[in-house]
Amino acid sequence: MFACCITGSITQHCNWLRQDTDLSLQCSCDWKEPHLECTFQDLPVGNYCVQVEALDTRCVRDTVWVNSSLIKKMNNSDPCVWEICNLEIKNETGRYKATTEHPKRSPLSWLMVVFAMGAIAAVCVSLYMRAKKNLIQRYPNTANTLRDDGPCENLIESPQVFLLYARDCLPFMDAMVEFRNLLERTMDVKVFDIWDDRRREEMDANGEIWVLNNISAENTQVVVMATPISQIFENGFLSGKKRGYLEPDSRDDIFLSALHTCIRMTATHSNRCRKFMVARMNCIGCNENILTSFKPLCTIYSLPIHLDHLLSHIHNSRPLQIGVQRYEGPFRKKAEEFEKYVSMNQSYIEDIIN
Image (tube, rainbow, N blue to C red; front, side, top):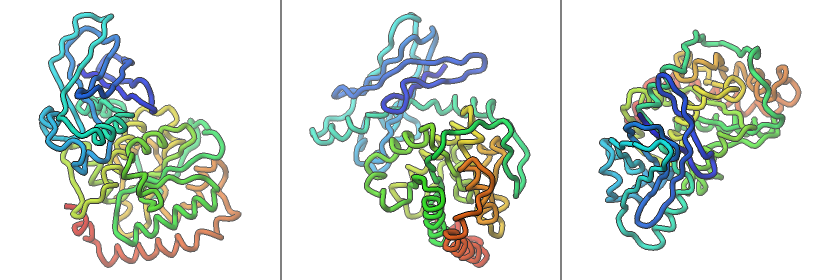
């Protein structure tokens, strides 16, 4: 059996699934120098494997957990994860505390770590993979499928929009800048974008926490851009084989954290067909850009062809006509430049991903 928890400002519990039972665990994780201590309450009797992940972009930049004994706990030497197995729980009504030591550091370093520990997630990777297979139903998908509002409930008005896409070639990134501008000006909503340079310092400081807080907000709708690079990273999650950029950026791992969060939420979210939507750019071969984990949404918008429908989905109304044309020109221009770039550089992904 696996035990998991998410603590801090996000939520105080998480639901985990096994073959026959749903179980909600109360848990908490605190930094008590020189230990990371996690307390799990009301664990049923049994043997457990516990994984705890520190949500901090500095982990991947090797500035916090360097030479840490935590690293040795994981087979894949993940610097942000601590794992301990073969824990035997004999008393179902008791509390279990798991601690691990961490190398001595300067007071400033410990302050950084304490701040980072504001949100700790115990991620049950193996359990997640098994549960996802059971939860995600395979629905047919086509290139120009549009949404069905039937079972979807309405979100509250004036939603926030989280624009999620993998770092890509310059023409694609330029198109996304104009897409973000269009959403902000046409919808008059706040748009969260990991690659917005105005948020660079915020991303480097506490990107994963920022991602989880904003994606989890009830009034946030998520637009996931399906691209070949997003497919590569999704396949990495499903297969356990990690891929990376030839020229890494500190925000790459923030994107991966956000994608992982969205994959998990689409498998369990009660209003997933309203909260999440998938879009892809119109170009040669782009019809093959399908993210397997998001197939249950039955929604793929090809941009800029289905731009009006996508905006209507966000606004929860009929297709918008007034105001869109005023701002869509720059986006359409960049979209055409990206389409032309792909047609002339169909193997450009090899110059980006290792």
